Amino acid sequence: MPASEEMPDTIKRSPKHAQEIWSKAHDSAVDEYGEGERAHRTAYAALKHEYEKVGDHWEKKEDSGPSDSKAEGGRDSSGESHGGVDANASKEHLYDVAQKLDISGRSTMDKDELVDAIDKANKRETRDSREND
Image (tube, rainbow, N blue to C red; front, side, top):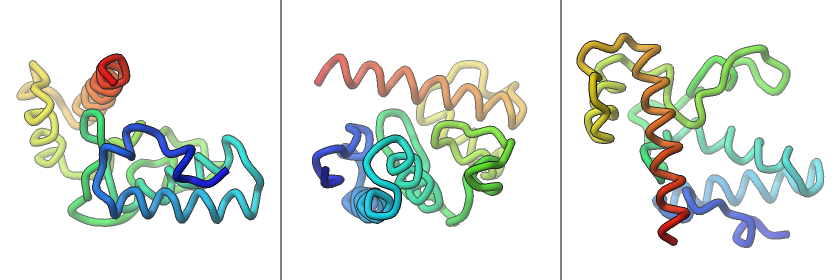
């Protein structure tokens, strides 16, 4: 099935460039591995190099590259994925994202706590957007 028919809503709410990255990677992965979860994971991995999840959509990152230890290590790595949060970003950047998402208590959080709080807020906003669509 073409990527345009399988594209998740969070990506549909994102910039055209993010949609293009996801679609191209997804279609290529389908050609290589077939339909299914692996094609989706591959498409998300490509997207996460250029974009980060902020709330219910994806925004361009300041610097491209892997977003977390899972992305750095590849498919079989034991690293942890953070659902699109750019865990490799500076604490200052994460604080700014937390501020944009109106996360309370952000000023006292360390970097790992900010990553977890942003991930949780992203999931909440995505869930809320699905319910309102």
